[in-house]
Length: 599
Image (cartoon, rainbow, N blue to C red; front, side, top):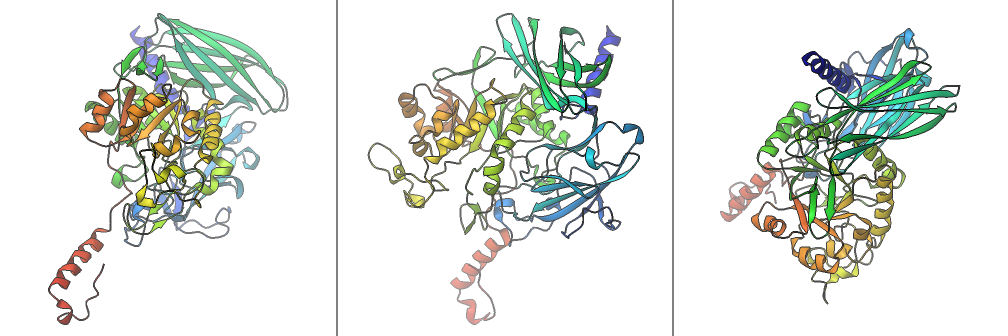
């Protein structure tokens, strides 16, 4: 038994490291010895480029964090620059791999990247937070060296309200696969729990990229943490040439060990693809059993135990480490948060690295997985100081029309197997009054109990807030296309305004940002709405609004750990300002006529 458990431990560790999160093929990290240059020029993707004088770096890599801070840069991003840069790497593809397909998988590149192999473009991905893969097979030279080049365009450096980092700031993988293989993120396992039993629903998407019809057998084995196989299925399917196919199966387990905050029990789902008596693909998926219940009157229950969600919001950077955060740093941070009573994380306001979710699975932390901070229009970005100065309007809005559903679907497909993920969020404060949407309710009056004096009330020339409902419905549909087992949410900033639209009704559960004052009135007016605090202050009043109301299932404090960006005014500028005030008070211009006083 001891030997069996040891072998199973080796199996799990091997498969978690060998099988990258793409979920198919034979994969390995290619993080070491990249070439880097912080400049742009025509032709840097070519095999003929002399990169001998480029800087040698390892991935993950964030170039912004190593640059010079400057008061001329945006406070929104911590006074650090963006720019345009290139990465290059040479890889050898063995001749004996000929006949196999070759993929490149990037966990995250910030942002607006384009990837080349041997000078040929594989594609572009503008969203800096989404993981993506390219089939490089058509341009691979087997038995020779092959060049990878990546252009990263973060020239719109003030495109966020916080620090994003720049570059290939997450892992990169080289993936070999048989032409018949599991599709990218092609294994989907979601549990259903009854009183004394559990059912793991499994869907496997398969790709046949060969020139012939393929007869395939797919075996799924569920293995517990003692290394015992507790359930098994075998399904046959035929897939035509250059087509895809799907199998669905159920694995039933009596008295499963449930995943919870206190006991995060996990299982391993081993999926094996057989063709003509040979294994052509396999992957290992970490999964488990747990039951989620959301109720408009009683709040939230995990495994039928009603509880309060005590969450925090977390950005993806690690302060002076920037956005290339080692797994060990996240583990320490998450363990510390759990030790002080935190039981949930909101990924503000974008998907995080795969390792982050793996750690939350293992440590027992719920995750509200969020996709966007803005939709079709840019929010104001503070260039001189937080909530002061002249705002800028760079952002990701320009890619929303073409990429919104695709990016969201990829986030869901990538993260849907994590036990920790208990809800999806399609946006944060996209309904912030007059930033950019407006509505007549902002003028106040009547029984609205609301006005927005800071930005002058209703602005008829601003985008109409009624647009929010239609966009929300589209995004909710994108989520539910690939996962119906969890609710879809959003963090509402202008609740009184959004209540005049179809936006809240499009959601399964509604997050209220700093709007505890409407917990009672909205519960009475919308009795079927599930409400929680999606972003809240660190004070007793905000907590009591959760603790003393059964229908509010929890809150997420802003924030759990400090982060870069949304900075105040430049420190030295502030010092000069107060010094100038001091000099003025003593009428020193006559003594120091050359002094330039700074406001």
